[in-house]
Image (cartoon, rainbow over all chains, first blue to last red):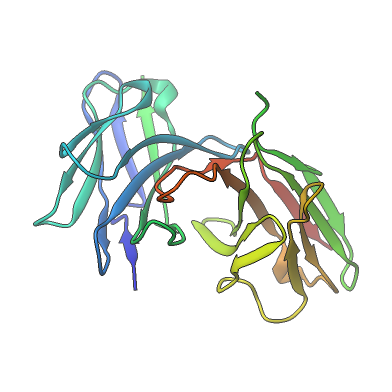
Length: 113
Length: 116
């Protein structure tokens, strides 16, 4: 069975500071990992994914994520947070080409001016 | 290219009524997924469909819920005899039919169902 954990319900960061949103996963095979962002009353927007290759994945809006196989983690990062990055972030895992997505519970990011 | 369309955006039903939620995938996408999001919770997978086929319905409640994706027209998520616990946001996502299935899913804006 596959699962994904986002250990922090909320992350608070000042504008301009680095932002990290944590995600750990558990799958039986090779993991396919995704990050999405949700703004209030909106659907989810795709940020980035790891399928294979380089452990550092770059995505939309200046976000990147680092795949760490030994720690089974896929943390989302942004070097300098913006107030507009305040939103709900979801990590998702898929353990096969055709497997369904398993989403984490989400992490609320609050960026203060 | 329009994104994933869902309608209605908001739906109010009384207990015992039926709710029909529609989803039109992005052009060229033949894979549709339905998720439910309860307040303060993440997304829970419900069902995965391709045209005229249900591929995985392991997340669907066994009773009152059904889904279809006909050859023509939108995908429909149907909830019969709604109860207050069905109140949630229901999201549809689609992905293209390329081999490997490693594509990201594109989400619609959701339908917010309120059961009175």
